[in-house]
Image (cartoon, rainbow, N blue to C red):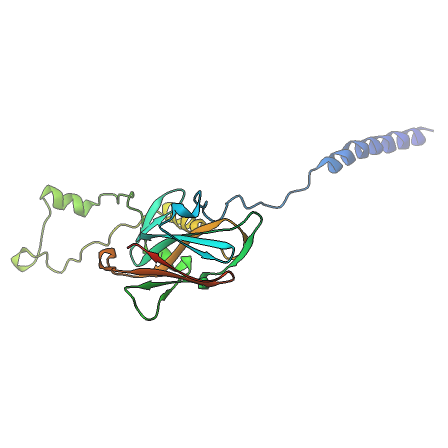
Length: 230
């Protein structure tokens, strides 16, 4: 008799525990897949006339403006020493779409026979500079500015001492700068209109040396040439 009572108590407790735990397991929310919160592309301007040059290609209006070595993004403007930049926008009727590719664009500089192709934004990263970033003052630069630096070797020329390497931008700042440029670059694939973005062309010279510029488009919409102002 006592054995039966004990079994009832044990089984009753097990059933109560299951009743408590089961709903808790059922209530556990399923993990949602991570969402990409970083919007890509840069916002187009209000109209094609807001850009330096325009060209009509079928139902698509292509507009562009030469930015020199400046790389304007919605977050900040940086510089690319080895590249020049063109901000381009494509406009069309409501609901229109277009297939975009980096190879659709090229830039003829100073009338050269072979225009420069549009380069991937990843290649621009090594050339990026942030004019707003001020390198921290090193101990060597402090000693030179204070006039207490010591030199060795004949003639006071500093001997065999090599100049210190320039300080590097912190990784977090450089990564953020590169992400801004990536999002501002012209996006590829099937895109709704209007669409805008930055195009990059290899050019290590000074902007002052550029006498003429032509942005050449040859893509899904057709062919066009836009004359830009250096």
